[in-house]
Amino acid sequence: MTTVTVSPRFQVVIPQKIRESLNIQAGQKVQVVSYKGRIEFIPVKPPREMRGLLAGIDATIPRDRDCQ
Image (cartoon, rainbow, N blue to C red; front, side, top):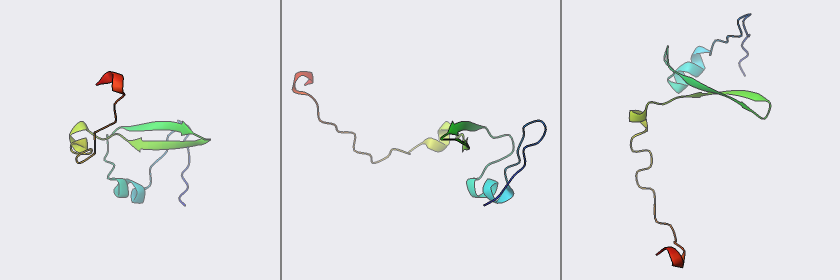
C-alpha cells in the first residue's frame, strides 16, 4: 500500500505506478468521491474512448402487456 502526504494546500501527488497503470495524464480530469469514509479518484474518460462500451449488450427487455 502506498501512502501520500496532503500538502498545506490540500493537494496530493498520485504515485507514478498508479498513474501509469490507469494511464492518467497531466491535465486530465478526475472525479473525487467521498464513499464510506474514504476518498476515491475516478479518471474521467473522454466520450470517444467510451465508444463501443455497450456493444453486444442484450437490450431486449420484457414489456408489460398494456405497453405493447
